Image (cartoon, rainbow, N blue to C red; front, side, top):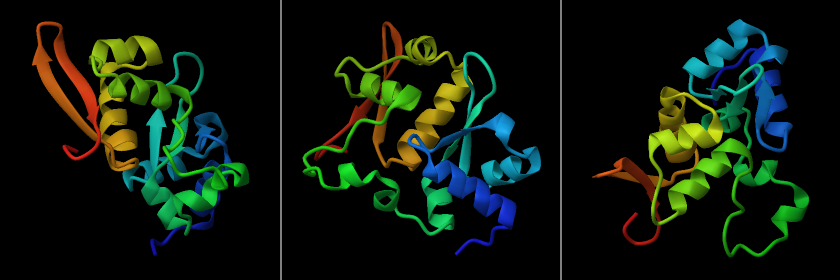
Length: 155
């Protein structure tokens, strides 16, 4: 298990306890957040207005000894396992756009989320590919590079 100091463990536990796994940057000591971001346990997600939010990653949950199923609300644990619920918030919006057969460009995702291009790319590689284990592909089209989530046997 990863060594964490008390402040780091408390911050990860606080983020894991929220519905979306996020907390406001304003509520966090900067050195603690910076260390956890560098170690891949948190992702900084800029907001269109106000302070950024910090999203706990799978590595962050592992570091405090939580599995994804342990952080789910009790009512979701009893639902049938037909399809995982779509995440809420901006990451959920990006995933929905990527699951559309038409896909989405970086510019489209920027408009929907209010993020800058580097933040969209970071969310694609971190929160979507690494944390959720989804396969994201891209193709060059006349409209530009289009990103899609590939599901099923081809994934």
